[in-house]
Image 1 (spheres, rainbow, N blue to C red):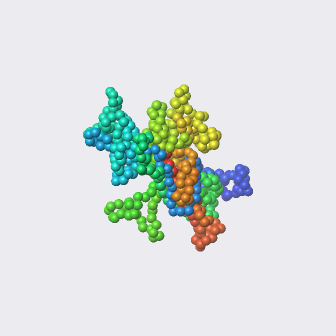
Image 2 (cartoon, rainbow, N blue to C red; image 1 turned 90 degrees about the horizontal axis):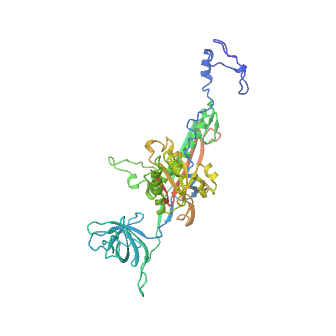
Image 3 (cartoon, rainbow, N blue to C red; image 1 turned 45 degrees about the vertical axis):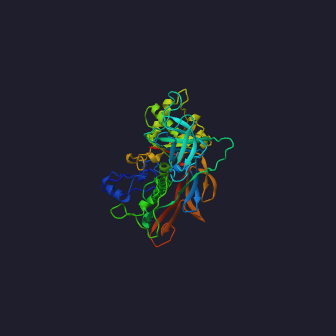
Length: 505
């Protein structure tokens, strides 16, 4: 029954949640307004999920793996290029025959005071710039200087025999940047063999794990308080206790942080980060335990330092313009490892650009670009349904298969979805595995190009560690009238073959 103004509360409560005439209360009545405000803190029984699934994790689980480690750092080696190619400049004197090698084809500097390259006397090389190319014989090597004798002209400055055979590689007034690669060798009859051997070159890289922590605390009195709101969290928890919901949010946020750190982290420049005098820069803290903040190499940092960056993103534009941009990306991959299968993790702008491009030219009879049905889906066990269930759409261009999906991390306003942090539009990650030499284990291993290493040994697993202290919740470790939930992880990201990755800006 309802309450009349000035009347007494005379309803009969029901043992379960039922709508009956005997337990009806008119909360709009003046007689019950004060009672409702005092005894019913909140009449809404469900928390409004206005942001959907708020977590952004899942990227690394789709493209990488996790593996335990027992040391303070990870050391791995990557093979160098098989063929010898260099960049340099030609001299400016008359009768040009010399080239100074300054960098290898990947931009690594050559030591000018030693023979820090693989070009040897007797090699046949092709020297080229944007205008012409010349085949030459290497007659002498003096540290970083090589003497080149063209097969069809007097020197590198001369136009070849015949009319209009090409522009000169060098001239007598301006040093010109050129590329050189070795394609063979030539020796005369009864000549001596080579006296200099080329040792295979490899690159060694390191990364170190960082320790991440988080913490949540709730007083003992608050643990027993019913929040009157039915809640559902990202970790699947539900019920009426606010502290359970808040703890679940803290844990979900920490799980996101463990992935975001592997994406965004950067190694500290020790020369800068070890402290500065007042007025010359920031003064970094000194820790009582003697530790230092060193950072770690995340995905974006690794690609920026060792991978590829595309400034011309695929966006809503004409199909021809987008196709040209995309083909330039493929040409860059051709110069690297040419990994056949790649994953595209894109923000909304880039994803729509790809959709427009595929939609506009997918039906062209020349087969320049075809839709998802023609992709092999090898990385998904050749199961198109599996790819679709994970949110990927496949297509093929040239000799490459691509699997495209939206990346919430690049769209969420609280992360990189805001205009201030939206410089990264997408990332291309190669699928499959690479064979590398692990300096810690001392053997060759096959691993995904992208994987997480976490500290674990002798029963101590720091992949995702959690423990409870205090005197609340049945786990009594101190006299503190509160429950303290601690979370810790120690991990780092290994980006092998970063030359096969691309950051789209």
